[in-house]
Image 1 (cartoon, one colour):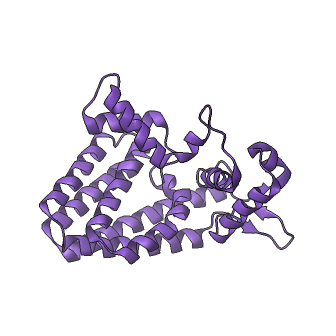
Image 2 (cartoon, rainbow, N blue to C red):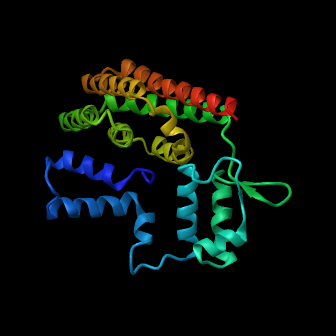
Length: 264
C-alpha cells in the first residue's frame, strides 16, 4: 500500500513509534527491516544478491510504477522495452500485463496496444463514493464494538498523525493506519474484501488529496473527530463523519485532476 513512501520517511515514523530520537539501535533496525519487507517488497527484490525474475516481480514493479504515476496516464507500454528493462522473456511479461488488465490498472486497446488508464473525473467520483459508503459502514460497526484497548490504539495513531502532520508521506501512512484500525474493529469481512478491491485504484489519487498543509490539517481534524465518535459509541455520528471525510477527499482529488487537465 505504501510503496511510494521513502524509507527515510518510514524510519521517521518508526522512531516516533518506538520513542527513539537517536541513531537507530538494533531493535529499530530490525523493526524497519520487518516493516519494509511487508510494505516495500519490490525494494527487497532488488537487494544485492537477490535476482528478481518472473511474472510476480514484473507485476509488482509495473503496479508500483502505475500507482506512483511513474508510468503516466495514457502512456503506452512496449513489450521489447519492458522485456529488456526487467530482463525477462515475453511470457512472464505478458502474464503480468494480463493480470494488471484484469484489475483495470492497464487497458487493452482495440489495436492491441496496452496503455495506462487515463485519470477521469467519473472514475474518481465512483471510487471515492464507494469508499465513502464502506468507511461509513465500518465506522458505524466499529462504534458498536469498540473496546478500551481499541480506543487507546486509535488515539495513539491520531497522536502520531498530529505529530507528523507537516509531512506528506507520514500523514498518508498514519491516516491509512487509522482507517485500517477502524476496519479491524468493525470486523466486517465483506467490507474488508471490497475495500481491498478498490484500494489499488485509490492509490493513484491519494496523494492529490494530501498535498497541502491545509488539507493535511483538515484530514487530521476529521481523524480526531471520527476517533472520538467511534470511542464514544456514537453510531450515527461515526458513520456520518467517516462518510463526509471521504467525500471531502474525493472533492480535493477532483479539483486537482481538473487543474491538471486544464494545464494540459
